[in-house]
Length: 252
Length: 117
Image (cartoon, rainbow over all chains, first blue to last red; front, side, top):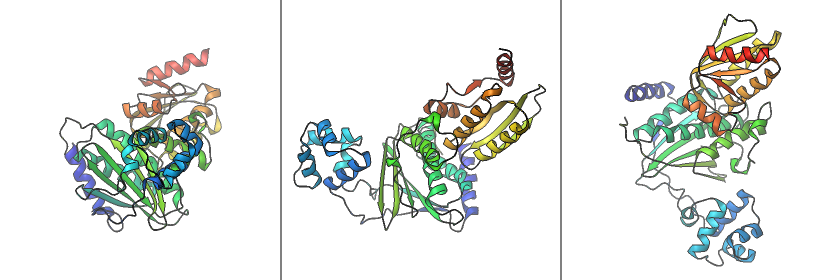
């Protein structure tokens, strides 16, 4: 069953051809490394947390946090742990300068798709067959599929001007404990982490805000970690991370 | 995705069979179809979800909207949603809003009982 699905979907990608299609790409190097202070400042802004509030949660002074952000002093590991806890990220995210950069030993699979809603089902087949080939459990896969679908729906609907054909990229990589999906588009700058969480019961009806917010709510519920950054060169770069439990069944 | 309106054989109840992925690409189609059914008269709607394999936020918004539209006429019942669909409804914490039934018959009975009360 799985094998057949894979064959079918592979053929589908070939038919899509042209600008679409799967590429196995080498991870890019030379992405500018950000310091701990810089990442902390960015993250604090994204979370909308004042120096004072963060300091209070961590149990240090606001000026200490400020100095850390300017790389003028280094926090102890214990403080760093508390900071990451307060900001809801892993300590390694703050520590590892190159966390975004996928390790060269990791395999990366990438697909490039036009901003058309009809490609959402192509995307689901792609993500599904790649994840199953890595023996990701069905339950984790369902979560990943929903989060990726929501993120890409938002790109397709809102990143570019209506009627213009543009492309976005979906890059999947794995290691033994996580699946990382990177979404890259050159459209309007948009940080989904800045959206307030919606009242789900009030998400009917029209309006871009409502439309966007429910999808982002699902993304946040389904994934363990979400990161966003924007650079003029790269555009929007959204990273979705799911820690996985491997399925015991056979993959492809 | 496929949408099929089936003659339920009971007045005031429309049975709609939905198949496939209810994502952003197709959810509008379902909304338009149900709106068409509701255009001329008040109807109660049964959506047979046995063969719906996926639901995204767009699809869920359409369900909530149909639910609201039919509030005055006795409502909407979802029949036999798959685990993945149920889970998405639960994650969004709207399982108390969307009535579910195991079979079309059960859904009919639910709607008819509601009509009498």
